[in-house]
Image (cartoon, rainbow, N blue to C red):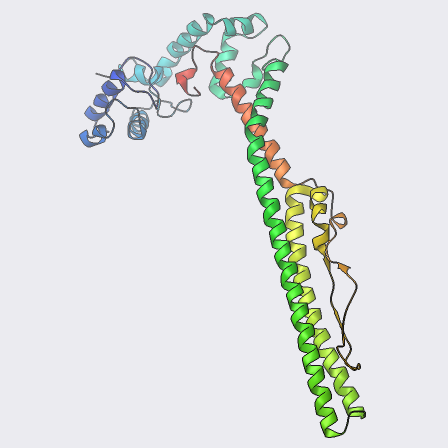
Length: 329
């Protein structure tokens, strides 16, 4: 025998056990299935209910896997879905008329039918109060504030982590480039000293050939530095753009000291050393890009609005008794 009470996934008790036995008789649950959770309305019971509803033509669009009035009517053999709809609506109307919340809405212009339709279709905008709004301003504002409180800590932690990761990545690029400059400068001095010694040993210290070799040495090191400068610039710009895309121009400005690169100057035509420092060049400027405030802020706002809407939907769904099939409880 099937249960005569509304049941929903997550519930437990004798009525759920009765439903499981009914589904076993229908060949939709096995004894081993039931043994995994006797009297517990779990995933297997939910799937079995859905299968039974499909096989028996029960419209479950308003509560897939829920054992509600429509399923009970069909299981009791009291007609098909269309024949029982009037009876189901009548039950909703009876419950709604006894609920003070619904009675208040009806007094302000909503009918029983409009409340039922709104809850069935999931469009709560048709339910209006005395202000002509789905919920009063205070209720809506409270839902938004609660949602903001729930997401604030998460997005603050996310921003702190991504800021630290960006700072670390930029610092590593700077350190790698500085190590390159140091090693390149030292190697230039070694090569220059070696070339000078070879020229002196050969007696061509002041020849035109030596001058040409000095220029070639300078050009080789300058070209290699230009290549390294370009690679590092692109890497740092990519890191800066990614952070700006997430958090906007103003937040990206905090890394401005990491957006500058210098270099070596090479001069083989000196007695000693021959390596100096060039001026710093700005390789990334947040101000050169658009003033978009950042995707993380948009993501935060979208999540907060979605959660606020969910809170209001929960309240709206509970206008009928404790919520249709307890679906949003």
